[in-house]
Image (cartoon, rainbow, N blue to C red):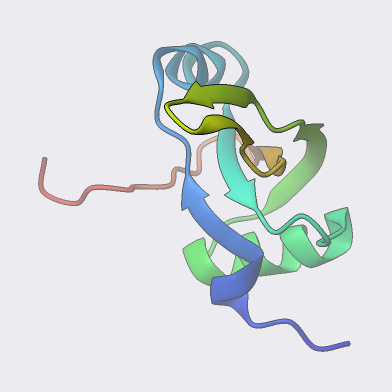
Length: 97
């Protein structure tokens, strides 16, 4: 099954926790497609950002139940990928900042 790179890596996750993980472990955190496996994620990251990926850890987070005026709704579950890259390489999300 052929995957497009844009549909595998959805967006980088930039939070306080992911910034701490980046500084301490040299891992970048991405939100990825729920059905993408580690091999597909690795090839997509290497092609998009031109870096060497050492390993990947993934986790699937369940959707949250939220209350609204009309009842309750549940958000979709999503998958996060913690990507460790080769020492000395860097991924820049915002260039010129």
